[in-house]
Length: 138
Ligand code: CMP
Image 1 (spheres, rainbow, N blue to C red):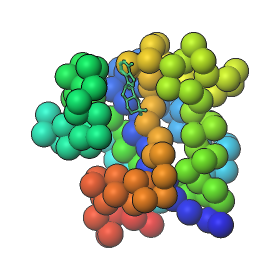
Image 2 (image 1 turned 90 degrees about the horizontal axis):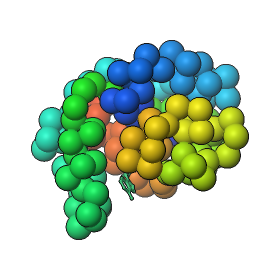
Image 3 (image 1 turned 45 degrees about the vertical axis):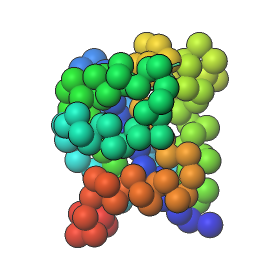
């Protein structure tokens, strides 16, 4: 079924000038852009967004990284969007990511891994609503 996922092209992708190439790969893979913007997460935003990781040792580092510069936030639509997007981005650790995946191509490390993809339909809806109002979705 056609459904939606949520992505962020993380600060390292913006800093390195990789957002055009990554968006090209996303649209060429059949995802339709439903909503998109450049936005800068506050510390509070990042802490809330990654609340599920708050007890992890890398939480502080993750919040620092995600707030150090702007991100591209977007909602994407496609048949089987959540699963297909996670396949397209590749494993969290770029060393484990398959050839041709976005993380294999553009991620520096497990921490700075270029792109976010929702892990379930439920989280995609929550994450999309965190960043966009109904009138920003098309
Ligand atoms: P993502 O899967 O999009 O969301 C959680 C993020 O936490 C993950 O991307 C990485 O950026 C980060 N992360 C996960 N595991 C580690 C780790 N072991 N060390 C540092 N950062 C991590």
